[in-house]
Length: 347
Image (cartoon, rainbow, N blue to C red; front, side, top):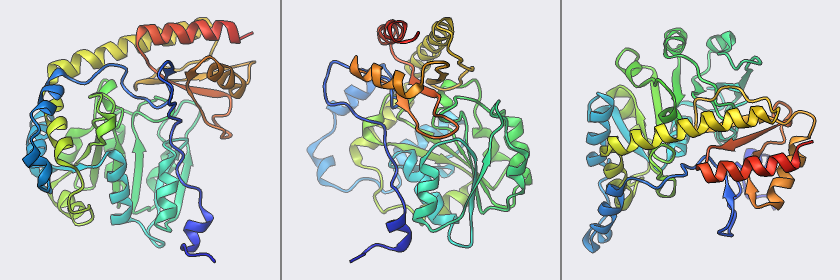
């Protein structure tokens, strides 16, 4: 007997990156920051009390909202906290999309978007990127209720300028959600667009630049009216008390954040150069990962051989990505192990 709705029965769920259980691995497959979070986070964790654990958390996480507003040059009412950036995506689909209100996004991109569309029974209008991952002009013409641009894009690492996204927001009748999960490693971001556009939502994650993937914390940036509407859709206590404390400590330590993101960016450029020396085709990246085309050696074969060496990267068995591997930027030591393994594997 089928108990689920027809669209749930028919769909496949999102497939997260593999999480190896063994300790001695080189884990470059899920875009985690290779460095630990700010020491201020560990200090804050030590101060969490039993009384805080006994009580429900602040339902809107005002402490974090105030800190994030200051960092982004906005007001607390422009911020909504979420259980990871993925919860914001879920909230947006629930708020704006249904069988009569489609979503549009360029592809290839984050593979959660079509899953969320199916959950809402909403149409998904997928507009292909060109070979250089430029913003497709057709994206502005879809009349979708929600348009999503992942920027920097996953899995390509490519970036679209703030000016181009401003023009897109101006053309759209619906909402533009700019997924900036990887913006901490880019040279610019779109936070300021919310001052000029009442249809723009910017997604931010604490998982990547702030090294807090385990606590699942993200936030939305938008005009106050849009935030108020999204608040209607979120769960009542959607972020926990410990996560609020740790995320607040992390975002307040901007000196540490800038130091570590610069470390990742330098390691990224070094990794790109080394991969290109191995004759792999690797475009510029604005994220904490790179997309490498493996050339004469099939990407699936390279992936399997790396796994046998306890080195994990990400392979997508999709037509536009089947000849490529997405590789998270690791520490210098991790990157060196990867390069040594590739020298053995590649012809």
